[in-house]
Image (cartoon, rainbow, N blue to C red):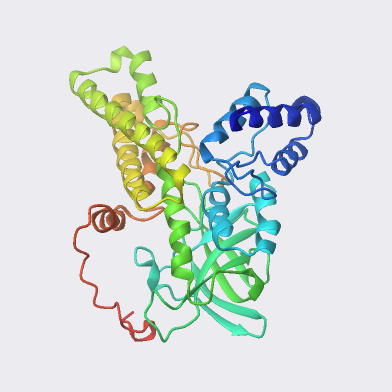
Length: 393
């Protein structure tokens, strides 16, 4: 019996024991995790079976055909795409057992406390401090642009634990309880009218040392695992043909012939081809992930994702003419996820402006591609060997 046959057998056993029509959604998801069918490439006992990542499609197809519920991955994308692979690689056995199951089932939402007002593109310059007091770390500082902080139970957090060494070397990585005293979440209202982002203030927040991921001072290396996975999660999602932003534009073109012009036709053809190239490149990247952890290639995918979203949404507004200038609702909301295709063209146009900032600015990602993919000389860095406390701020 092949691995694929074995997975089909296990999936059918799960469906027989927990029929989706008669089983509560959360109970089904927990049973799926315990059966090793959550993410089959994870180790046994942690939602997986230690099989190749590519075989997940076998499980997903069987469950979809049976009408089984999923874990709403768009809502818990930070946990699935960033926290989970970092915990798997650097967490203790106790941490893996505690966090991975409720993370995957969606019982506990995660957010990412990385960027700061003075440390966005230059993330290693972060100033949030964590000071050791016995078995705890006391954290003070401010984070910004934190998606899902208003609904999150846990956060992945990097903080400075040693100001006397260069900025990349004095950082430690933690798991922060968002319900702890001293954690304050404030909404950041965006140009869309929504506040999906937040700023988070940390005042004397106590984090037990057993919620540290990796060694003290090794947080930058741990964070690279998170960031590489984040870029793949944002720019490398698997999509069907005409999935994503190109879909609504192509649909409008077909359904509204009166809006067509020769110039718009040429631009749409160009962007359709580029979107298809990006989609197929994402498929190839997903296949490469079977062999190991994501590398800097994800930065290229995220770059393409941001540029295409902005160009496609701009074309859609032009195609719709006066309709494209309308906006459905400026009501202040605090959504749990970003819904690009569920809103109108005006929303897509405004929201896509953030794509070249979130998950690493396009300028920083261009440097990553240049240096780590193309092997070009690195930019001069005058602060490489300067202690963080001595840097100009």
